[in-house]
Image (cartoon, rainbow, N blue to C red; front, side, top):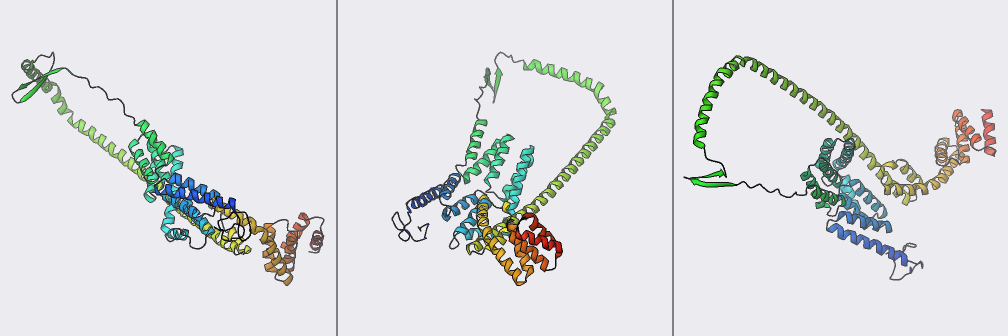
Length: 451
């Protein structure tokens, strides 16, 4: 444990032996952060990933430089399928601890597999599309999309949970229970999974078994057979047999006279009608198959476009994180110009909340320093006659801080002396408009009058 003020190694006292700073509260904060880390580690070992994430985030709230807690939180996110959040934690951890940090191995393992990065982007895109289908009420399409997501990233628990919810909505309770079980195998205390399980238990509650009506009957053995006869029914089988034969003879004669001959005569007409019906069924079947093929082609085309867009987004996001790392490295070396150049290449919206916080902190500190550096280098270039460099540096200085009137004035002078009178007029006029009643405004007006 090192002193927050001077960096010296602390001993078992409430004061730093090197600078005398009071480290009692600081020591307690670090101990509390480590305690939450140990709690998160124990929960992660028993697959309580939700509880582990809560404890680890609490540890980082107390000490954001606890790289062990941050690396473990990244592993928890990775195990639940949130690869982007995992990468964010590891990159921040690497910024806090440059050397001997296991986060380097985690990041390298992902960066060395471009196909994995593309898969991550594709799964995110498909998952978001499934949410759109849910909002539109297209539950079947959402289920198909989520199955594709899980075939590429089986550990994405959010996809399992959404799929379970859709199965509950469509009353397919057995499949819903399977998805919930898969989530609980990874994260045993997942709150949503437990809530869905309770809902399934309530919906699948067994009803009281119905009592079967007992039928009064008697049975007796006749030869090798057991005869069961209802109570109160007489056995008139002999009489019934004779009666049935007579009735059959009468019905047969009627059929011969009334049905067989008309049936023979209408046979050709029936065959023709059946042929027409079969042909109509074939046409309907082919039409349905064509419509299905067209719909599938449209779906595949949309998926290809979505995959291309996702790959582009993933590449841009990774480029932003690489630029953020380069900016932070230059920031640590106090190279403000390079830091600012790297920050300008970053798409801030592509960063996570932690990444945006790091970006904002560096940008705020670097801009003020860059303004004075750019003005000094631009003015020096103007004095030496290097107007091209002067224009570049002074333009950047004015863009960063519009109150830099001297930078604007010498930018106009640089354009004037380089022979670019059109731009010189523009910037002389800016000096006159934005800084009235000053000497540089009066000088600019005189130069304007002479042009």
